[in-house]
Length: 165
Image 1 (cartoon, rainbow, N blue to C red):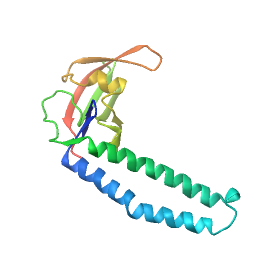
Image 2 (tube, rainbow, N blue to C red):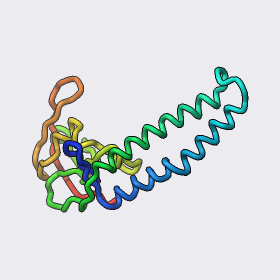
Image 3 (cartoon, helix red, strand yellow):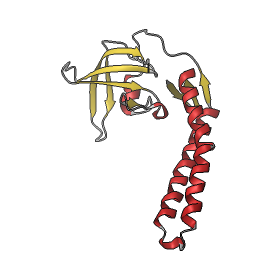
Image 4 (tube, rainbow, N blue to C red):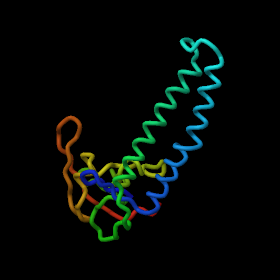
């Protein structure tokens, strides 16, 4: 679970370990693999028309960007406990909301930093309009947030429970 406040990111030990393992892989074995791809593509000849070379260099650039992101994130990380089940929305919680109070039109999401996003559940950052609107609200309370078109939307907090992975 993550909570970004200024430049500090709060992580559970599990999230920290997962991100640290990703960084170690990208900084070690993955760098070796991409260097080998680039070397093999370079041997194919003219680099101006070498699609494999350009694709490998682009992949290398994306990989290095992720290494820098993870390094910065982990340098500023504080490891803590997952949030308690208090019924108050906080980063690291799975939140269920109803749009405009309509219990048939609901959304369940993890309120956490994008670095902890998974394919298992949709993730909203605490800094996003919806995330900042619901953060700190109690179950049963209404929260307002701004839509991309500038209009306001209202949601009701139906449930808030700690994310269990």
